[in-house]
Image (cartoon, rainbow, N blue to C red):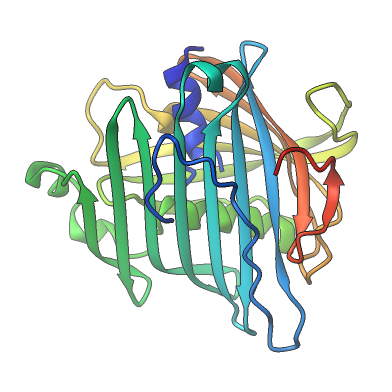
Length: 294
């Protein structure tokens, strides 16, 4: 797998994976944002992953979700940046944010923003929602009029942004203990579905790269293209991800259940692995892994 494919597949990981504008030199670590519930107890957690390809650590991925209120309102932040030898050779960072409402097992986004810089090329995309439906898309540089017409308006209702989709996938597992069968996604230019199906449980072994040991339950994640894609071009939606989930103690903060502890990726370019290395509760207290450099 080459560097481009490694950064691409990780972008959907958890893209699909996908705050404020960032630059390639922005090294600010993703902080846990923890609103306070009506009961006065913080709710939320953050997860940090190391992503490997070809035996080398290539990326660090941070995922943080925080809640406020009984509904509740949610805010999710995802950041990725190159690390290890790859980070020494290529300085790249990606930030994404989504906020909205988590209601009866369904996610209703209100705003989405993502930004990244690669080889001096900047890209930022924002989506504003009305009643959970994407109403305004702003891209810098702008998408072409032809690109915007590829997704018919009738395809957009019911579809959420990539970061909200990741949030829904994680929370369905953590709160309900299930693989979320289908999540419709619209990223401002393309429509596709995230599909998951259960895998048999397996025992995971600890290694120098993977600190978690114990039994995990799995969900296979695949993607179905709907509209807006260029023909014959391989993209992140062509990958498959086996997501292995276990309880590492995020029940603190009112969030019971399991979270992804290992990601096994199969892509048109090769294979990759993501390992949970740290988990923190909404107060920032470490509940899994070592403190590391965050």
